[in-house]
Each structure stands twice: as structure tokens, then as C-alpha cells.
Image (cartoon, rainbow, N blue to C red):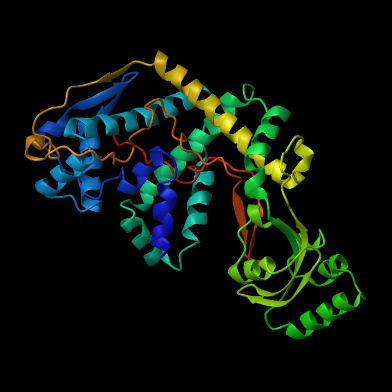
Length: 404
């Protein structure tokens, strides 16, 4: 279901888990206890109501609205209401620190860029009703989702700005270390090329296949002349290594049965008719002593992974230093908050399940769980996904903004 897609996307990254819960709460739980200030970040207030709304919306989306169920959940998660509050405050502190750091460093994100990102996600849904339904199931609204996109893009822009000069590229030593670590898992990877025809053009596909098999035309020339996948056609049909792509299942099944140099028959998929050639198979040596023992595309994948990790670590340190200089003040938890229950009724558990947002630094590092894998971008014409460099996995879906 597409609702699962948005749920998965909005929880990518440590702090973006909170987006699933909807900072823009579905309902407000106003009370006298929630009328004060929970914390300040360099003088910027985080209201108690903001924290309460966050927790209450989490309870609603997780079916924890009654006191007994909520108390048992906290006990199982080895948490108390005070710890829940602290984690959510830390979450909002991180958001405010990121915003303040961005402003100080002249970093901003345009409304047009945010709108484009939201529109791109919305385009995955058949109509507005489906989109709104997915947002509702994710516990947020379109406004809340838009805020999450803005925050994530702002963080990415800040990270690029502050790490541009301090982050070194991957050294040959780092590449070799990772190549030695991953070579075994790379072994057996297959590189392939394809020629794509329209679903109703089987006659042409069969004619071209016969010409390839008889040697009348090379696979590469046939791809350039006949393939409707114009991107790969320019490179003789090359779509890269299966390890770095996610092909449609019929393509994967056909490639699995091919050895190096072999050409498939006609392969039908939702994207049309494929003729597939296995152009290489990587067999890892017993010991990797040089990076040139690993295909250059796989080394490029490792390089992106290392550089992404280096950038993330540099940003985390920068933000930790920034936080150290900040003035952050938390108030004591007031009595009478709607999520405050007597935990003596509920025995503690050894479970380590924690409130979404736990483990996240209040330093504003919203990408501490960033994926370091090379990202892929779907090619809807070929049914394959091409290799692309990874950006922060929370780039489209981080935390929504606080309403202080």
C-alpha cells in the first residue's frame, strides 16, 4: 500500500521518525499544565503545549489513548512520562538549533524547492484522496509534511555549507579497507545491458534478437539503434551492476540465468520487451590487495559511501560544537500533563523499545541515521533503477516544525 511508502519515508533518519507522529497534531490537548514553556534555545521558546500535542498525537496514532495502555507501553519501553517529555524536548531543541545555525550561516531553502519536493512525492498517488489518506495514516497533514520537507532540506543545505571545506574525500587507504570488507559480498554480482522495445513491438524485438544471435549486428549497435530506453542506449544498453540497481523481477530472473557474454530471449515486463546481455560477472579474489581488483563502479559506490559517512560525521561534530555554545534551558515537568501517569502501577520491563526520537542528539543532527548506501533513482521507461550518489536519507522526510 502506498500509505506504507510514506510511513517508511517519513521515518527515515533518527529525528524524522517523529514526523510519522505528526508535529502538527491531529488534535490539541489544551490544559493548564501545558500552558507554560518546556524549554528555551538561545531564548527561543518551545511551548509545553507543543510537546503535549506531540505526545498525544503519538498516542492517538499508536492506539495508546487510554491511560492503562499508555502506562503499559511506557513500562515495556523502559520509560517514564518525564523521559518521554525529555526526548521530545530534545527533538525540538535539535530543530531549533538547526534553524538558528542555518540563519547564522546564511543558509535557506526556497518555497519553490520545497513545493517541488512535495509535488514529487504527491505524484506517487493516484489522486488527492489517496494522498490525503496516506498522510492521515502517517499521522500528519500536508502542511506538516511540507514542514518536514523544509526542515530536512534546510538541514541538508546547512550540512553542505559547513562541511564543504572540512570534509576530505575518500583516501585510497579507506577505499582499500572497505573494498576488502565488501569484496566477498560483491562476488557474483552481474553487470548487464539491455535493449527495450514497446510491449506491442514483439516482431521487431524478435528480428533484432535473431540478428544479434546470427552476428549480423552487435548487441551494442542494436541497443543504440532500436532501444526505446534512450539513456542506456547511448552506452550500448549498459544499465550497470545488479548489486547497485533494483531491476523489475522478470529482468532479474532472466539475468540470474545468464553467464558472462550470454544474451537472453525476449523478456516481458511492465515496461516492455527486453533483450538482456550479461556483460560481466565479478568474482572476488581470495584477498584484495589493490582497489583495481574491484570493478570501478563498485569502487565508486564505496567512495560515495565513505564520503557520505565522512560528511555525516563532520556535520555531527560541527553541530555538537554549535550546541555546546548554545544556551539551552529546560523547565521542570509540570504536574497534571495529560500523558503523565503513575508508573508504580506498571512493572518495569527489560525491553529497550524507545519513544520515536530517542537516541537522537539534541544538537540538531537530524541525519544521524543517514543511509550511507548509494541511492538509486527509478527509470520508469526501462524498469531499472540507475546508480546515483546518496544524499541524506532524510532529505525529503525529516521532522516537522514546532509550533511554539
